[in-house]
Image 1 (cartoon, one colour):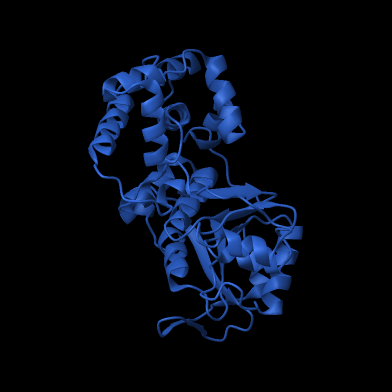
Image 2: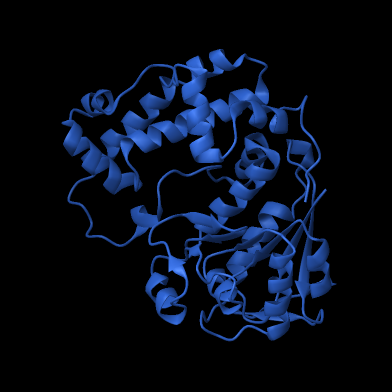
Length: 324
């Protein structure tokens, strides 16, 4: 059973706590999700006040972080407020011990206060990136990702991107099917493509005709992933030139048509590797990679593993216990 530590201290955001609890604190083993042990860890187990008149009761002290497999840090309502020193010390010791740490939204400011993000890439809500850069100039702030990892430290963009990160961490530890089971229960997407660039404030477009056309193209592409699709093919479906299509696609989704298509192919291959015993060449054919070599190259680039190692880790017949 994977052990998750929610770090609790005064003035943390209730939404972040709710996300962590919803992903790891609900028993969904009857729906195909793995079991988790989620503990709320505070400096002295005293009740933790949160904005909105809410209170959180820690059930473990900070020493429990030493036994956790994953530590998750909510953001503070006041992003530059000082974090209790015992919390910062516990996070430093956990990181030095090799325990992965994930910070949701403004939680990046907590890790930055601990000095853990110095010289590392990190992300926060798009409206806070300048504040993070100014307050902690040693942090390499990424402007538009949904979440990033650097040296075992995960940070996410604003609000709903915390859900994306939590589900990604489930998918990394337990496979796409486990993350999908939790996402279905939460009525959310198990994986979103693009970056938070798609959510940054822009002037409202005069028409949604292009957005509707692009949605139809994406849906059609998902039904034809086994075909050797090109950006020109997708543009033709939308009735646009390739250049105009690429521009509208990036504005709508925050990513390029080619990267989106490759991400969908990798995701489809993950599902086949988890759920079937199809040989590698057939998995590559059904997902449009054409060859096992090409599929292996894209797995290495996106998942830092090979299709065969992925199947060994996440296929029910070859799944092994999670290692710390």
